[in-house]
View (cartoon, rainbow, N blue to C red):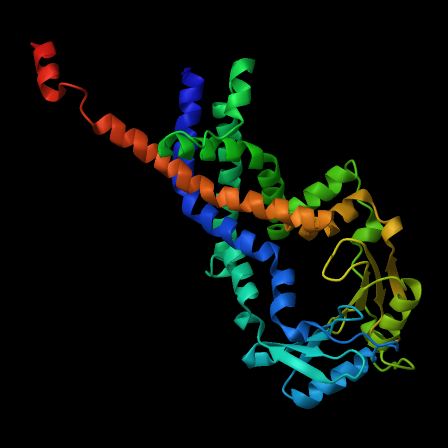
Length: 384
């Protein structure tokens, strides 16, 4: 082995020791979270309603139901219509009591279920995935550093493993299932690691873009060839000098009606009711439920109902489109069910690599510690 590869092997091994446990936890939770929508749809009846041939209840009517049953709610920041055969949801801020996620029948405004988000299994899984159940400002950095190290490990592993001769490549790309278990473990580490590298790197980079605005902005500019479009980055504010103005109807109702009219084929509508004085009312129309890519958006003055900004999908820059598809890329659903399966398998392989790598290291360590044939006596004779 060349000095260069010896140095790479040293880095590969010790970086693996440093990041292995975190990589395992993050990868396993990523596996679980990939299919969280499908699993919850199968387990929970409150995620379904009978589709009806009539319009949704207005957002203001949904809020009235929530405020009636949860009078302590100090704000209702998000209202979501998930689809014709799905419930609506209201995210209510209960102050000292935390948050309450309330599900309602969108055709009747009747509350069908509610829960504290922190008690949902998949929210806990997501929290572990992002922060390891430690305070987010610290957990985010621990996870991100481990992910960056993992990316370096994947690249160094690929360089170390890549066969020199073309004749060796065919057998190097397959697992020798009939061999001894140590050889099978060696192949699982190297061969599966090779096949998962490209997808694992994409998942890692998209995860970093979710964690850090600076990473997301880098890809925004890269996709746009270094250009930043001012209208896409402009912060929209309501005119707080006009707090006494009153729209003819609640602005959240105006926002939903506008979105439904302009994007009638959208399956999901999300309304953001910014509780700050200068905040605007935002609404997004999503082409598919629980998918956050193809989105048209609008911002309204929260007092007058005036339309302040429009973000139509076909007008967005490549950078903004890339930013908005980042979550769908990270969980694999950008490619539908096949994409989720690929992301699941890549995450599962990533979780296995610290384990198979440790077994390889342990085997080599034990092998070196065992005396050769003849043992100490042979070495003593040789020394004499």
